[in-house]
Amino acid sequence: MKFKHLPLLLLAISSTAEANLIDRGNGMIYDQDLNVTWLADVNYAKTSGYDADGAMDWQTANTWAADLTYGGYSDWRLPTTLTYNNGYNQISQELGHMFYTELGANSMAPIATRHNAANYGLFSNIQDYLYWSGTEYGDPNFAWYFGYPSGGYYPTSKSGQFYYAWAVRDGDVAVVPILPAVWLLGSGLLGLLSWKRRGNIR
Image (cartoon, rainbow, N blue to C red; front, side, top):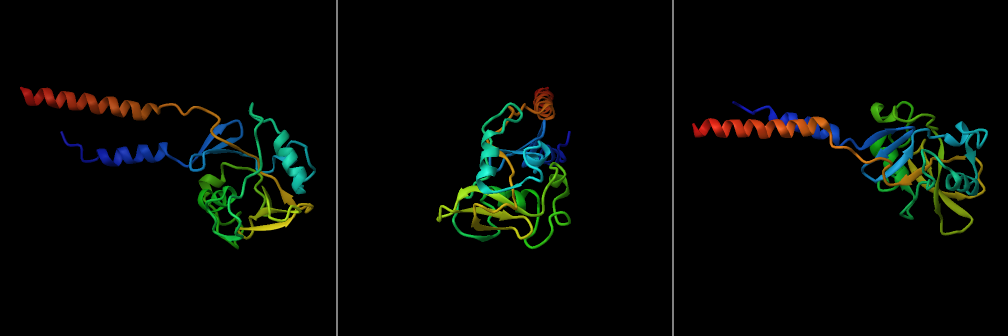
C-alpha cells in the first residue's frame, strides 16, 4: 500500500489546527501568535451603551476596559505598545500585529477594502480610524495610539476625544480540545502500520 498522499493530508490537517485566530464563540477571538484574546466586537463600548459612538479620551477608555466584564472574564485591558518608536509596520505590537499580520491590511490603505477576508470577517464594527494603546508616552500627558487608516503608532494627548477602544485580555478563554480528525488519523496510521508489519512477517 502506498502512502504518497499522506504528507499532504497531514499538512492540511495541521494547517487547519494551527490557524492564528480562533473563534472561541461568545464574541471572543483567540490569537495564538500573541496568546491574547480579543473582543470580536471592535467597538463594544458603543454596542454596550457605555459611550454614544465609542470614541473616548484615554482615561475613559482605560476605565472602560478595566471595568469591563465579558464572557465571564474581568481582566480586560487596552492593547499595549512595547516599543517607543513611532512609525509603520510594527508587527510585534498588539494592534500592529492585528492590523498587518492577522487582518492583512496595508499602511495608508482603507482596511475595509484591503484585508484578509477570512480573519476580517471574524470581527464586527471595525473602525477605520484611531485606536488607543494602554501605554503612556514619555510625557505623562500623552499616550500612544494606532491609526487604522495609516497603520502607524504615534503619541497624542490623553485628552483627545476621537479615539476608539478595543478590549483585549492575556491568554486563552478555553482549553483547546484534541481535534478528533487528528486523533482518528493517528489511530488509523498505527493500525495500517501494524497490519503491514503483520503482512511482512507472513
